Length: 64
Image (tube, rainbow, N blue to C red; front, side, top):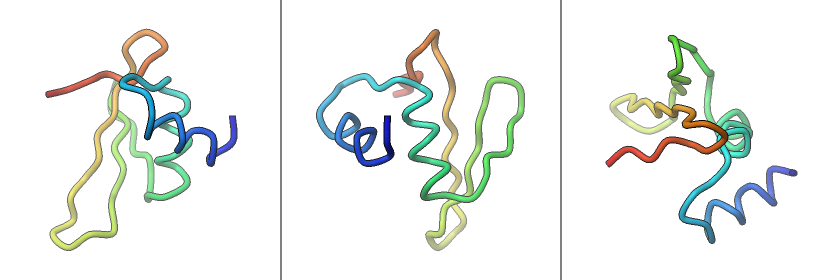
């Protein structure tokens, strides 16, 4: 799946495959730094917020 296709899936699906979300994050953010099952990306926004994604089987883990 291309980055463009992954972005479309992110817009339309409630759940997205982890590998597709990882592809999007690698395209747009710095990183990842991996700690165990956490893939942590640095974002360009003020205050240096971090984006932390995890895998839940084949899908990206939904954290609320």
